[in-house]
Amino acid sequence: MDVPGLFNYWIVIVLMMTGFYVVISRGNLIKKIVGLNIFQTSVFILYISMGKIIGGTAPIVAPGVTVYSNPLPHVLILTAIVVGVATTALGLALIVRIKEAFGTVEESEILQQRDDDA
Amino acid sequence: MARQEGGRVIEIVVDIVLLSFLAVMAVGILRLHNLFAVVMLSGIYSLISASLFVTMDAVDVAFTEAAVGGGISTVLMLGTLALTTDRENLRVADLQILPLIVVLITGAALIYGTLDMPSYGDPQAPVHQHVADRYIAEGPTATGVPNIVTAVLASYRGYDTMGELTVIFTAGIGVMLLLGAGTRRRKG
Image (cartoon, rainbow over all chains, first blue to last red; front, side, top):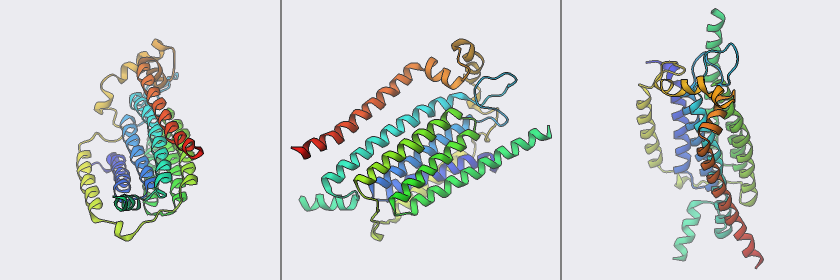
């Protein structure tokens, strides 16, 4: 088994699962968004790792360079980063509204209030 | 030739060190209950991942991540903390075993999936065998832009980038409606 060759993917999975765990196990909404960001960034690292060629260089054409890393994952991830910040902003705006309406950003307290009202 | 080999070894060592830093940051974010510290750590996490993108030759992605992930996201989160709270109230009763089991099983399945992935940096990997060569060979002459990422993003896939702008515009409208509606109601 090629350990150095797969190390990138394994750390990506560790990061992805940490982010996933934060999202599903923590009740604080802000922390959930941070967990989602960790997850997102791990996916970016996965794609960029696949585009890398050892001994290659950044895909900007220069005289004397023959090996370039694959530019297509970079293009995909540029789009993903910008869309990611847009969704983060929307999520945070929702949290601010939830705080105004319920006075808390803890999921358990919000559910408690809803049960009390019902 | 020996120097080139040395360069490759350093490339991999830097890659491993930065990835390990990221793992440490992620665990720190998981363990801390002060949300201000969590947001700061997530900013550092973005900057380290930007450095990692530089070592993986993705310079355009690196500066976007540093500006957008490390800068704008952190500012937005700090703003949210100012409007809400900076403490996480974690009760021991909230910690259940089920999420941990789900995460471990999913992680094990994904690790199993990586076992036949091409090795990191392998020039023979399937991802390099399709259209990438054509973009590298023809992109600069066909579009006049030496940066191939820019050539693909703005010229070959220009419509996709316009679609991305639609997404950002929609999100911007959403944020304005959510936050603007609240202030109007408070006044009335």
